Length: 107
Image 1: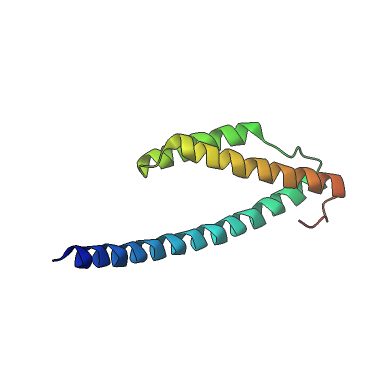
Image 2: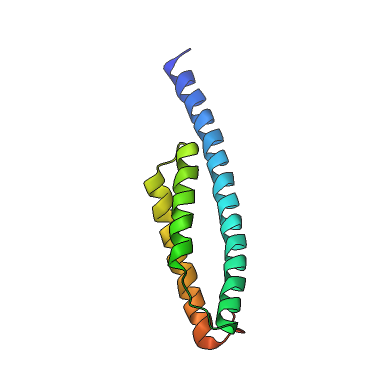
């Protein structure tokens, strides 16, 4: 195999791997959208019933659960926790907006 053939084979493999990554990225976006549909429902329930926008005890339990899942999946648990904290911050912001606009507010 020549250097050019080897490079072409590597580029072909790279394109296939990138296509897989793109598919996973698309799936993640759809899963996040689905997750936010549920958290918006939670936010409306909380706003309707005067419940606080955040639940620190649940967040702690979720972090422990996600860190364990990450370890099992050979993913850095610290990264999983950072991701969760980022998502939760967005969810809490939505819940606060709902609480301020009433439960019928759209996000």
